Amino acid sequence: MPRIRDVWINWFEGEENDYNICPFHEWNAEDRIEVLDQAEIVKVTERLFDYVENRLEDLPDDLLNEIFQKSTLRKKMTRITLDYCFVMYDGKRVLAVDTLGYKTPIRKSCLTPKHERIVKEMMELDQSDCFDLLETPAPKEYHILSPHPDYMSGLTRKERQLKQLLFMAMDQLYTSGESAEIRYWFTEWDPSKYEEIQQNIDKEVIWQQLYEEVKAGWSSAHYELCQKMIKGQPFFEKLWNMQHEEEVR
Image (cartoon, rainbow, N blue to C red; front, side, top):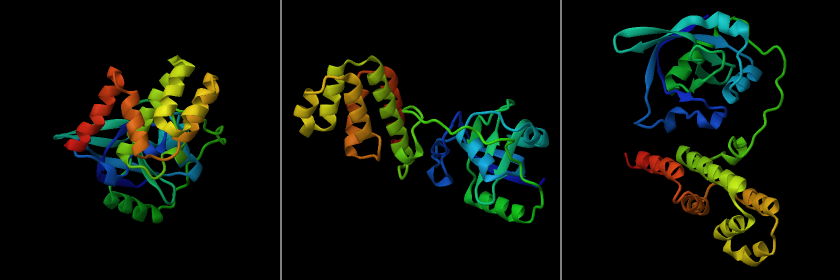
């Protein structure tokens, strides 16, 4: 298998959706960039690439056996052998993966444009067989805490993070809020629907209506609703402040 050297890596840990694995142009100065001294490159099918990129499920055993302890991380003057770390290529896309010694793709990273180009050039000449799944996985299920990619399409890194924070606040509202509280937040979102909203007393129906209006896109109205909903909630406020501290840096 081909190998690539001196690869810049920006790991995103525990992510099960590709939109949270930021491309190089979205890397921030405060991100912790590491360098893979060398990394094994494997050719995979589009199906396996999608599976690894968008799930946290076990990797095929034949793939794990092939790449076992063949990649190393450079830390200062030391080389650290990684059990299951590799760069995968499906003919179009490139992604680095590390399992932290487990069987699941816990850490994932895009590559810099330079290293991505090198991988593609190397693999165009490679005659290795593609790794694949033994069977087609069940369709992935999305939910408010793991939103469908359509709801994140076209958003910046900060907008995606704030939208996920908004969804977390809405999920809490659904779990613990009364119908009157949900009607209040719907009015905050769209004051023009005040009379219509007040006539609906069913918690499930009114929350679903609010979610349907909020789930697509990102706007100043989304920003303001998020800011208001998380106020007075220490955990959510901490996440909010972290996003704005990154912006200031």
